[in-house]
Length: 413
Image (cartoon, rainbow, N blue to C red):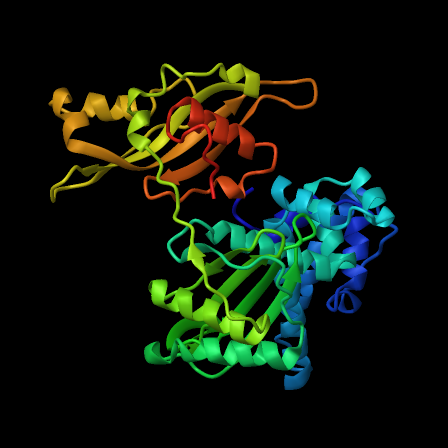
C-alpha cells in the first residue's frame, strides 16, 4: 500500500510485534489495552485506544502542559508508524539483514515476521541501525538525480568523529546558503553502511523563512517557519568514491568537498568528477520487440515502456509524454506514440526520447511468484535503478544492455 494510513498499517501487525512496539513507545503508557483479547482483535483495540486518546485530549480537565505532552507523543506515534511503513520493502529489509549479519536476535526475529513487522521490530529494538538504513535509503533515492554528483578522491581517508570538527564543518556548509536566506542553525547525523564500509554525513541547515498554512486544535493558522535544507555526502574509503547531494550547482558541490577535506578528513583533496553515463533511450523506440539477448536467462518474461517523454531534436518545439496502461498485454508507450502521430516517418528524425519508465515482468520460479518491477531512466544518465532490490538491479541492467541502451561494460552509477 503506497498511501500511508496508521490504522490500516497496524491491521497488518500481529502479536507479539504489536505489543512490543506499543509497550516500548512513549504513547503506550497512556493507552488502556487488554492484551488478553483475541489476537485478531488487538490491532483494532490499539487503534481505538489511540483515537480515544486523541478525542479526550481536548478535554478541559487537562492542563496545557499535559495536552502538549500527549500531542507530542501522538505525533511520535504517527511518525514512527509512517517511518516503519516506508521502510517495509525488500531493499530496506536486505539492508537491515546486512547491517545485523552477526546479530542472532535479529535473525530469529525475522524468521516469522513479514516486511512490515520486520521494519517495526527494527524501529523498536534496533532504532540506531534503523535510522542508519533509513538515511542510506533516502540518499539512494536522490542519487543520480538533479542535485547529485560523484567524484573520486584519495582512498583510505578516515572521516573524523570529533563532534567539534563536525560542527565546524556544518557551520561552514551553512554559509553557502546565506545568500538564499539560510540561517545559522545546523544538525548533522553520521552513519556507516556495513555492506561497503561507506560513511554518510547528513547535514540539516536552517532554511529561509517560509510561511505555511496548517490546522492546529481545529483552527486554521498561518505560521512562519524555517524548513531544513538537506545536504549529504557518502565517502567510501576502500575506493575513494564520494557522492554528494548539494543544492546550488557544481560550485557548491566543490565547496562542500573542499570543506569536507579541511574539517572532516583534515587532508587537502583533489576531487575528480565522474560523469554520468548517458542512456541511449532512442534504442527503445522499436517498442522492445527484438532484444539482443534471451531475457528468460534473467527470469524475465516481457518488458514494456509504461511511460515515455519525447523532445524535439536540435530545435525548439513542444515536448510530449505518452503513458500506457499497466497491463502487460496492452500497447506500450512507443506503440501508442506511433499510433497518435500523423506523420510516422518524421518521428525518428525529429524527436529524441528524453525519459522513460520501464516495466519488467518476471517469470515464476520455485522460490517466487511471477511479478513485475519498474524503474525510471533519463537520457542524461539519471535513473532509479539503485532503488530496486539487490536481486532486481542486475536484471534491470541486463535488460538495458540487451536493448543497447547501455554498453556491456557500463555499470549504472
